[in-house]
Length: 240
Image (cartoon, rainbow, N blue to C red):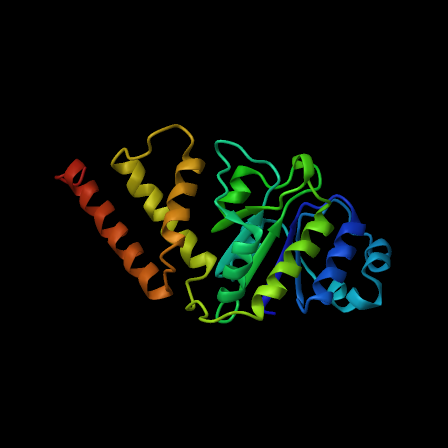
């Protein structure tokens, strides 16, 4: 499957290896790791076993989540922590269907957080959709276990895809658009509270539903640039 699994700041090399094995089990070849605490290859390959050895050896390490996702089109994050600022509206099974549909024409990333605190709000901002895996008592799964369960659901959903999603803009293209939208919101005082990340996350979730293509993203970026220029001219009619 043209899916990328991304582990963010994993603490234990064994979880990287176990995730590599899970990827191999379900036909996923791309594993990316962001700022790992320890990259002990002996411990990684021991847990990967022969099944996941190739995936483990081919994994890519990045310094930031933004860099790891730049060439992806559709990003889904996993969280065990829920609350007022962590609204999750889709079950894993629903997200799995979307992942399977997008993966036909797009590079899809599944993002899993650190073993201790998961994904931060800033990291969840990078995701177009967020899901949680329900457990007894709301306890969180080991990150490698979460990868296994998620890929299983995606693997099952992939066999039932009726109509694939269109190719959408990459994260790099989208982030340029969101940065311009953020500038416009600030210019017209359209940020209703001090938590800019939360506000921009809401905007991202809204626009993600429209499945914007590269051409459509460029139109929005061009509009925002024109609007910002016009607003600047209103504030400084004499160019001062």
